[in-house]
Length: 450
Image 1 (cartoon, rainbow, N blue to C red):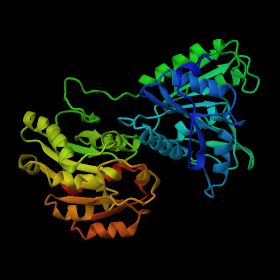
Image 2 (image 1 turned 60 degrees about the vertical axis):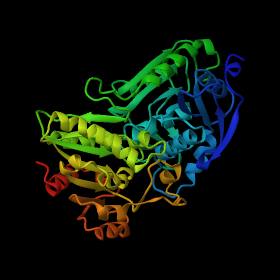
Image 3 (image 1 turned 90 degrees about the vertical axis):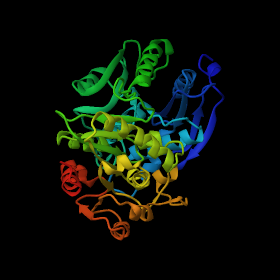
């Protein structure tokens, strides 16, 4: 009764490989989204009360039946599993359905099997995908027929061929990871878990002296569970750049060493300002370029217009131009961001346009919208997007450059060659094998950044 009195009655929502989700909503507007993965027995018993408790703290909670999800994963014909993408897509779908005012990185919670899975999700996903995780009853072995994909840093080895894997230690996880394990746990012995987690960056292990693997008596673990959740609610909040620039845009500023006259405005892909975008921006910063990075997932969560976006970008660029009249600007976008920057370039005030040395489109598509849609993330191709990127790029009088990965759609690259923009092909796919130096070298030489 403690939990159910404070939360709205359970709802259900079916979504892709997750099947039927058990949804628990707070009475007011949600302050967080929690994706909660059950143990291998499915969504039942203790995890239900845990989910209701989180809803009582203000979170929208999606209860995921691990048994169903594991069966769905097993149907995949790929060599490895990458569920981090499924969880990010689920997060976006739920936040659109429940009308979150702005996108929030989801908090992952898992019990037993779910605890191991969310460790794998955080290890394989780019930094910035998830706010963090809480694992209850964690050990590093997991039953699955094929391994989890390496992604951004996960490794594993076979325990039983075709049946189970051991997820290896990571040097540091990309998001905070809280582990609540019982000292009396005989399924995941506490000392073995402590040895595994020792020295891993971004991990907090909380010992529960009176708890076994079942988490049966709430008084023995609930205070620690509440504390971990409260810590994650404030984790990863964007810096406000106080005293530097006043703006509501979700930006991050990366400063080079020493003074510079070069400033790059960079717009991320629809996954947001993840480790790919941040590492690429950092590479430009090491070469003497100040970078202002815009999180497209947050900014375009609600629909914008080209005029509105240009106005807000122009205010930021003008701020720096007023302080350094001889400053040179460049504008770069990745994926979703690449699709919107031609519309910005063609609407810049004359003074800013004259100071802009070039436009760089990394992996653009030929159609764009000024709003994040779940269909975009799922590559469903069932929406008619109102903005023609190729036609708009043809109008751009600035120097322009398009870069694609070798593994990307060659027909799209051909369309952009017809705009008059140079098109370069780099090794790799949509992330260019994470070769940030190669991207930076091509950009700097092409648009004459000094």
